[in-house]
Amino acid sequence: MKNVSKLLYFDHAAISPVRPEVLQELERVSQEAWGNPSSLHGVGRTAKAVLDNSREVLTHTLFGARPGQVIFTSGGTEGNNLVLRGVVEAKGVKGVHIISQPTEHTSVLEVLRALEQEGAEVTWLPVDEFGLVNVDDLKRAVRPNTALISIMSANNEIGTVQPIKTLAEAAKADAPTAVFHTDACQTAGWLNLKDLGPLDAITITGTKFGGPRAGAVWVRRGLRLEPLQLGGGQESGLRSGTEAVPEIAGLAKAVELAGQERENRTRQLIIWRDQLIRAFLELPQSRLNGHATQRLPQNVHLSFAGVSGETLLVALDQAGLAASTGSACAAGSIGESHVFKAIGLPKRYIRGSLRLTLGWSTTEQEVKAGLKLIPKVIKDLRTKP
Image (tube, rainbow, N blue to C red; front, top):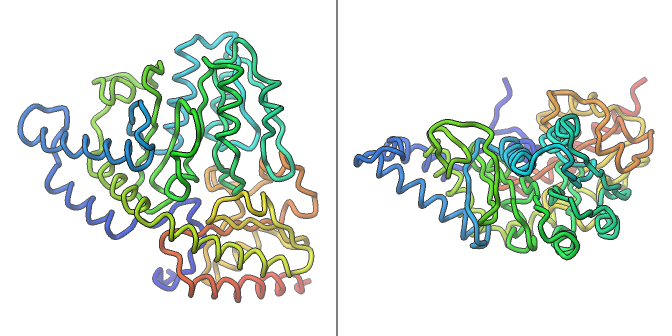
């Protein structure tokens, strides 16, 4: 087993290690507020106070005090399911028109494909070579019966950041009653969600910025959703089940820390990101995937012709560096990415992709080690028969 303390970890987009301060908060709340927040006695009221405080932290620190409510979930996948199915089923599935785009996370794509099978109609907007949606394409796609628009704020594989504010404003001008949702799981903790424009629902998870395996959905006040699960009516009837108070408190702590550090940390991550990109583009037959500047501060995604991504990952892992080729949410498969198909990645680059994602624990020493190790491994693989 590898010495974790010596591991070069470049896979924060899959999951980020939990911050020490968050672990302390998890332990504290587990000991001091272990009750059921729905109970009326003192132990329950203590847990309820922690739950309410956590909701306030997310409302003001992360979502910018938008008029609406925060619903706690188990993570991004549940949050996306809740919004997409909740909106469409509240309106009646058959004949409902939905707009999205083909580089979404699978927790959006699979839900929309299922809704198509149930009678909804989905318009899939094209994306350009960087994975960007064009606002004119969105405006042309909007109809009087458009009920839902879902476009992720930043791509989890290639890191491209969508112009969500521009898209949302254009959509609202042409279809004011359509619900505009964004999956902000990769964005939360790094970019300011207060700048995303006139949205109706936002999905986040704590696992990408040092939080526990808990998530949340912000929904506009008055937005009607059908719940995915029925039971005790917790979370305003939208997510029944006893709330995981320690994990929720840990999520709030991670949000607080990210808010305090975001400006300085983001600036540093962009410097390291661009150092990695410049160095790796000096290698022959290399290519940057996603937009050069309109991208997440912590995302580096490149392809190398003549190299197998699977073989590269194994070689890097053996050398003590953890990375990925793309999304970690595709049942462990490393096949051709749906994102690559959508952006039209040239065939010679498809199999040789490498995603490096930085995070709260990334150090300059790690970046320097990666700059030295990764080109060496690629050169070695290219010289092998």
